[in-house]
Length: 528
Image (cartoon, rainbow, N blue to C red; front, side):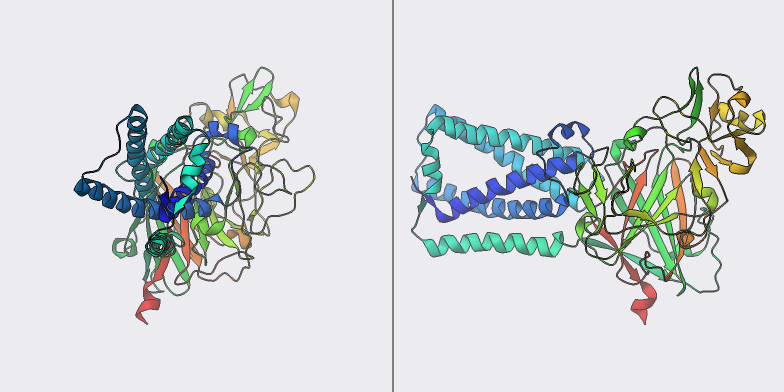
């Protein structure tokens, strides 16, 4: 029996979309399922999010039109009192088809809700992954079953199309195409959610202290974004609530997010029988997930495309002519000649500076000889002075030599009891160069690893003032920056600029994320 033109087109379109969606989806899933790195060499790399979104919208359009066709065909058989002949083979195929009718809507629905960050009531990330695995099972059962039943003749059955009613059939195909393309351009290409930036009097004082007790925060509108996919958070997710205000010169932001623990023990050093060792769990691969500080990141862009303004490039080696990354997750970089501004607040390394590290995503940089960690387009703004450094000369997983040790033994006594609010930053000038003969500390002694050479950055890298406080399982972070810093590495804050946020729960790179950009809507600009 020949199939209609629309059936043949939809069938092969669905097969192609399913294959692309599974391949790109499993690449994205590597971020939360490291076991999938076994398939790293066969999974696509680069900006796969955009391809995944396009294939998902197309599959949704094909499935919608095919569902309507199936309903019409079933009603026709009912009224004509016709049916498919009963046989064990047909019963098997019917059962598998119903399995597909359950799995594909589940996959599409969870994907759409997840895409629009609607994951408050259930872990859609895990549900979508399970549905994708079941789709793979369905493909094997469906395709394999027909091949066993018909052999090579199955290709003739699905390739030869019935040419009757060509105009109607092509119209059906065109309708599916319009639904898919229209849906993608309406919702998928640049998904945004607005954040009103309140206008405030320039004479009103704002104390960037992380306490959020200024009157403007009682009045400014709030936007809560559900972020997901991070290490150590409950189910990998945490909601981030955002408020913003501006006075014509500076902009102010207030971020709050749930984090059950205040994590400040950043790669502490511990004395072992063979010497000093960095406590770590993944740091050698630049993917520490245990002994690390809490962090928060904000990205700004005058482009609002998905995948963080097209800066997310997944895979161990998304750049063929550049070094592979150690953790297999991917790189951040931009290829369109525009920078994306990145504010990177760190609970240990920058919080006592009252700053967020001012960074940016730009074009991939050349690899430097001898450089162990290549960062692609993720770079720090320039600075005139100020720095924090790690308290070791060369990192080795089993043993390191400290740069400096305390001038007085009592200086590290507080760190032996793991006091919750103890600062894990030590001053360069309170310590002295390491000398083995002065290292009389007993085995088990703990020492911080972050050395301040000065109390803050100066220059371009210090453009973002920030202070965070933790209380009752929640971080509160205040940030301030001039609307226009004049730096080529900063994005001017203006109406229509898009923002993304990420939270880190004592993890180095395994942060939460969200799909929809947050679009800044300046209240003063729109009231002029």
